[in-house]
Image (cartoon, rainbow, N blue to C red; front, top):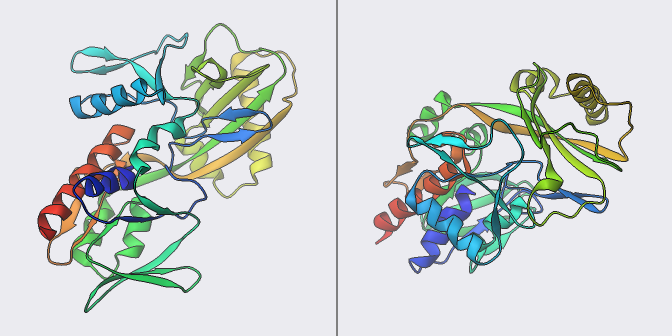
Length: 314
């Protein structure tokens, strides 16, 4: 989300922007995937707004039908912010809708994995894993997880060195489809065991259509770290068995289930700065991990980096 937020701000200022995304779809953990006929938000589960700017963006999304408020049955619904409980919002019909307006009027290239960025006389050049390149560009915004940013910016120590403070952890996500409802009385559960961090009825979110039950489960950071190299099918079985145990579910076999590893899914220790930028080189870094772990942090980080680049190029 940080990269698209940065791109939108620069595009609105009149700059030509190109985005290179290594995945097939944009948005990072603001992700929605399909399993059979059902869709699952297997990354970010919801968003909250602590600033007027991000709340304005959410209101914009709600107004055009890309987002809606989610009020699940849960003892932990809402989050503290400024002394009040913050409402939860989700993208409609999936979390991926949250980034759609950010991508408007921006040229985006998907399935393009960046290997190296290189400064030459006329500007920055981008080299990809397939050994092709593009450029020159006047400036570059690196909006990837901190460990990947360190690899890309290894030659620029002033930018790469501060990233050593950032710690990110993996997170296994399990998507489960059941023919009938089996979860007890809540729609959301949190920190159920040393293995399970999050359980949610995905089909209770607005604009989701499901014949039975679609469930998203996130494993704890410690368990995900211990099993990050495990076979996804083995992980899926272990996570579902743990969920069945902690919730006391009747014996039931999911119609379908699959596990996905977010290798840099959670922020354990943030950078503590909104972004990093070198005016000398016109290259900067942004991401949720700069400020914390929230989608709002990614939105703010990308926007502020864009403003720094605009100021440098103007």
